[in-house]
Length: 141
Image (cartoon, rainbow, N blue to C red; front, side, top):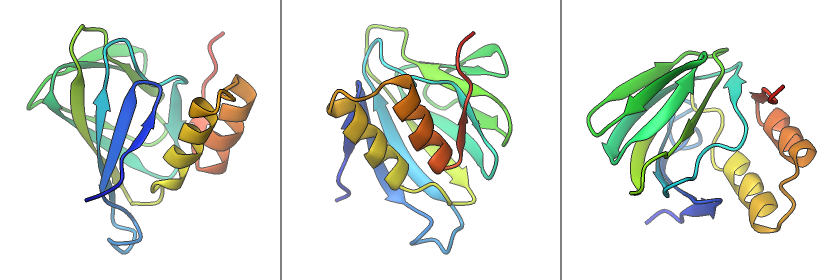
């Protein structure tokens, strides 16, 4: 059983990663508590992301447009497109993420969890971790 990564109302569970798939994909679930979400909108230069709703509803903002991802719904986020998500409802939600190719892995989420859970999640520290792992943060103006 994979070890979950928990931080800021999120719990990720990796099912596959680039190491085990020859770089083909990263595959993980994310449970999102009410009111939780991605702290910094961003885009990826090196991979595409597909999200599939398993339970509850998350709202994804993709290229400035809000899209609800309910159970059975999916959304494709091409590399270079700014996105983020939040659970705006009062029940937990779970979605499956597929990143292709599989170049991100667990390390980004483990570093993020260490910052958030250690109380060091200031914007500059988060930005540095994101950039080191190929995510380009888009800070609010």
